[in-house]
Length: 282
Image (cartoon, rainbow, N blue to C red; front, side):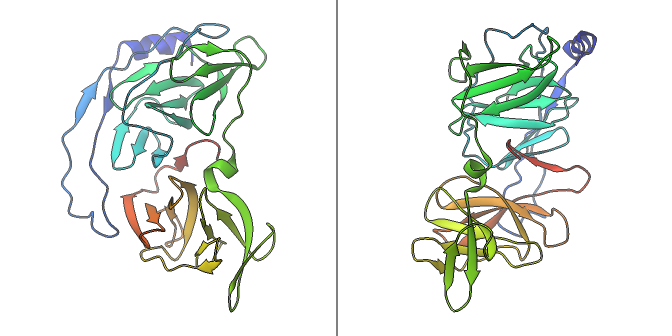
């Protein structure tokens, strides 16, 4: 983002719309819209090669939350904020807030306000699995340069980080075979599955009914409300996974499933006008 555009943003307002949209599967059609709240965005001038600090927050947000975006709208469980005119290209979640990458500029929100980080021409943003360290890569000097930060203090730190991986988000890959009994094997055998941070896992394949399983037994588990076609997007704890209901051929809703309670609930409906984006890594 150019400094000229930053100046334009500094003169404007960004609306943050907070709505209550969470509910059980199939029960949100009659919900009335919640009141809205508008706050001011705080852009910042680009600092090269990298600022010494980044914003920190104390919002009720953690890396275990179910977070996704569509266009300029960022969702955290049953809360949502509209960051327009910032379009969310990617984001990472840290304790207390979310770092959003839009148009090459990095922003921070705690869902109460939106703040610039003084970082432009950003090509990548990474975070540790715990969310305690952030790494930002930009090309303002003409070549990729990275800077790491402590997300608790906001201060720059030396070195690089160990970034969150796809296995951290989805679980470790495993092959699942379902016959008279369920068998777990190496990835590439049977139905592709993921075992989460605890004993539970989920096997999914295009065009097939998903298979929730207990890796310790191993057995297939009943799970009421699980869509017939489902895309796993992450785990918010050892017992809970979440993802997209795609039973209609495309995204219909974000769904959360609690294996210990043997039931799934619909967090929110999603439209098809904008792609549904989950936290890095994708």
